[in-house]
Image (tube, rainbow, N blue to C red; front, side):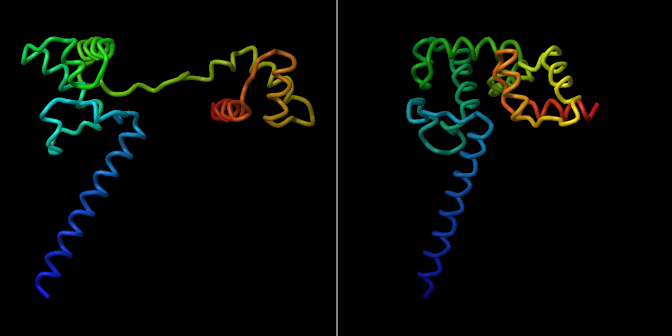
Length: 167
Protein backbone atom coordinates (compact mmCIF):
# COMPACT_ATOMS: atom_id res chain seq x y z
CA UNK A 1 0.00 0.00 0.00
CA UNK A 2 2.88 2.39 0.79
CA UNK A 3 4.20 2.11 -2.79
CA UNK A 4 0.88 3.19 -4.20
CA UNK A 5 0.86 6.37 -2.15
CA UNK A 6 4.36 7.32 -3.26
CA UNK A 7 3.40 6.73 -6.86
CA UNK A 8 0.22 8.75 -6.33
CA UNK A 9 2.14 11.71 -4.84
CA UNK A 10 4.67 11.66 -7.68
CA UNK A 11 1.83 11.68 -10.19
CA UNK A 12 0.22 14.69 -8.45
CA UNK A 13 3.54 16.57 -8.38
CA UNK A 14 4.13 15.88 -12.09
CA UNK A 15 0.65 17.03 -13.10
CA UNK A 16 0.99 20.18 -10.93
CA UNK A 17 4.32 21.00 -12.61
CA UNK A 18 2.76 20.40 -16.02
CA UNK A 19 -0.23 22.64 -15.33
CA UNK A 20 2.10 25.37 -13.98
CA UNK A 21 4.12 25.11 -17.21
CA UNK A 22 0.94 25.28 -19.31
CA UNK A 23 -0.22 28.33 -17.33
CA UNK A 24 3.06 30.12 -18.04
CA UNK A 25 2.84 29.25 -21.72
CA UNK A 26 -0.68 30.63 -21.91
CA UNK A 27 0.29 33.80 -20.04
CA UNK A 28 3.28 34.35 -22.36
CA UNK A 29 0.99 33.84 -25.36
CA UNK A 30 -1.53 36.40 -24.08
CA UNK A 31 1.19 38.96 -23.38
CA UNK A 32 2.91 38.45 -26.73
CA UNK A 33 6.10 37.12 -25.14
CA UNK A 34 5.85 33.50 -26.24
CA UNK A 35 8.75 32.32 -28.35
CA UNK A 36 7.00 30.56 -31.22
CA UNK A 37 10.04 28.38 -31.92
CA UNK A 38 11.66 27.45 -28.59
CA UNK A 39 13.14 24.36 -30.21
CA UNK A 40 15.51 26.60 -32.22
CA UNK A 41 17.21 27.94 -29.08
CA UNK A 42 20.49 26.02 -29.03
CA UNK A 43 22.17 27.62 -26.01
CA UNK A 44 23.03 24.80 -23.61
CA UNK A 45 21.71 26.54 -20.51
CA UNK A 46 18.22 26.60 -22.06
CA UNK A 47 18.27 22.84 -22.59
CA UNK A 48 18.12 21.80 -18.93
CA UNK A 49 14.53 22.98 -18.40
CA UNK A 50 15.38 24.73 -15.14
CA UNK A 51 15.54 28.48 -14.65
CA UNK A 52 16.11 29.26 -18.34
CA UNK A 53 12.95 28.87 -20.40
CA UNK A 54 13.25 28.89 -24.20
CA UNK A 55 9.52 29.70 -24.45
CA UNK A 56 10.11 33.11 -22.77
CA UNK A 57 11.15 35.39 -25.63
CA UNK A 58 12.20 38.26 -23.33
CA UNK A 59 14.54 35.94 -21.43
CA UNK A 60 15.93 34.51 -24.67
CA UNK A 61 16.65 37.99 -26.04
CA UNK A 62 18.23 39.16 -22.79
CA UNK A 63 20.49 36.12 -22.57
CA UNK A 64 21.43 36.55 -26.23
CA UNK A 65 22.51 40.16 -25.57
CA UNK A 66 24.31 39.14 -22.38
CA UNK A 67 26.20 36.40 -24.23
CA UNK A 68 27.59 38.95 -26.69
CA UNK A 69 28.27 41.72 -24.17
CA UNK A 70 29.69 39.68 -21.28
CA UNK A 71 31.06 36.57 -22.98
CA UNK A 72 32.34 38.41 -26.08
CA UNK A 73 30.55 36.14 -28.55
CA UNK A 74 30.02 37.15 -32.18
CA UNK A 75 26.64 38.74 -32.90
CA UNK A 76 25.68 36.69 -35.99
CA UNK A 77 26.57 33.32 -34.47
CA UNK A 78 24.90 34.26 -31.18
CA UNK A 79 21.67 35.22 -32.94
CA UNK A 80 21.69 31.81 -34.65
CA UNK A 81 22.50 30.06 -31.35
CA UNK A 82 19.42 31.64 -29.78
CA UNK A 83 17.21 30.85 -32.77
CA UNK A 84 16.77 34.48 -33.81
CA UNK A 85 17.74 36.47 -36.88
CA UNK A 86 20.51 39.06 -37.05
CA UNK A 87 17.99 41.89 -37.58
CA UNK A 88 16.15 40.70 -34.45
CA UNK A 89 19.45 40.81 -32.57
CA UNK A 90 20.11 44.39 -33.64
CA UNK A 91 16.53 45.46 -32.83
CA UNK A 92 16.82 43.90 -29.36
CA UNK A 93 20.23 45.50 -28.84
CA UNK A 94 18.88 48.96 -29.73
CA UNK A 95 15.72 48.52 -27.62
CA UNK A 96 17.77 47.36 -24.63
CA UNK A 97 20.24 50.25 -24.99
CA UNK A 98 17.37 52.72 -25.16
CA UNK A 99 14.91 51.33 -22.57
CA UNK A 100 16.73 48.62 -20.63
CA UNK A 101 14.89 45.39 -19.91
CA UNK A 102 11.55 47.11 -20.59
CA UNK A 103 12.69 47.56 -24.20
CA UNK A 104 12.66 43.79 -24.67
CA UNK A 105 9.01 43.49 -23.64
CA UNK A 106 6.60 42.91 -26.53
CA UNK A 107 4.99 46.00 -28.02
CA UNK A 108 1.30 46.22 -28.84
CA UNK A 109 0.80 45.76 -32.55
CA UNK A 110 -1.53 47.69 -34.76
CA UNK A 111 -3.07 51.12 -34.38
CA UNK A 112 -2.96 52.62 -30.90
CA UNK A 113 -6.02 54.84 -31.28
CA UNK A 114 -9.16 55.26 -33.36
CA UNK A 115 -7.16 56.61 -36.29
CA UNK A 116 -10.00 56.38 -38.82
CA UNK A 117 -12.42 58.31 -36.66
CA UNK A 118 -10.96 61.75 -37.30
CA UNK A 119 -12.76 64.88 -36.09
CA UNK A 120 -14.37 65.16 -39.54
CA UNK A 121 -15.73 61.61 -39.37
CA UNK A 122 -16.96 62.15 -35.81
CA UNK A 123 -18.71 65.36 -36.98
CA UNK A 124 -20.39 63.32 -39.73
CA UNK A 125 -21.50 60.75 -37.14
CA UNK A 126 -22.88 63.46 -34.86
CA UNK A 127 -24.79 64.99 -37.78
CA UNK A 128 -26.33 61.61 -38.57
CA UNK A 129 -27.20 60.99 -34.91
CA UNK A 130 -28.87 64.40 -34.53
CA UNK A 131 -31.74 63.02 -36.58
CA UNK A 132 -34.77 61.99 -34.52
CA UNK A 133 -34.25 58.36 -35.61
CA UNK A 134 -30.66 58.01 -34.49
CA UNK A 135 -29.04 55.24 -36.59
CA UNK A 136 -27.16 52.38 -34.99
CA UNK A 137 -23.46 51.69 -35.41
CA UNK A 138 -23.96 49.29 -38.35
CA UNK A 139 -26.04 51.84 -40.22
CA UNK A 140 -23.48 54.56 -39.47
CA UNK A 141 -20.67 52.32 -40.75
CA UNK A 142 -22.57 51.81 -44.02
CA UNK A 143 -23.22 55.56 -44.36
CA UNK A 144 -19.55 56.37 -43.70
CA UNK A 145 -18.50 53.87 -46.37
CA UNK A 146 -21.03 55.20 -48.89
CA UNK A 147 -20.51 58.92 -48.31
CA UNK A 148 -16.90 59.17 -47.13
CA UNK A 149 -15.41 56.07 -48.78
CA UNK A 150 -13.99 54.90 -45.46
CA UNK A 151 -14.37 51.44 -43.96
CA UNK A 152 -14.99 51.65 -40.21
CA UNK A 153 -16.05 48.73 -38.04
CA UNK A 154 -19.34 49.29 -36.15
CA UNK A 155 -17.64 48.38 -32.87
CA UNK A 156 -15.11 51.19 -33.44
CA UNK A 157 -17.99 53.61 -33.77
CA UNK A 158 -19.60 52.30 -30.58
CA UNK A 159 -16.33 52.69 -28.65
CA UNK A 160 -15.79 56.22 -29.99
CA UNK A 161 -19.30 57.24 -28.97
CA UNK A 162 -18.81 55.72 -25.51
CA UNK A 163 -15.54 57.65 -25.11
CA UNK A 164 -17.25 60.85 -26.19
CA UNK A 165 -20.10 60.22 -23.73
CA UNK A 166 -17.62 59.82 -20.84
CA UNK A 167 -16.15 63.29 -21.43
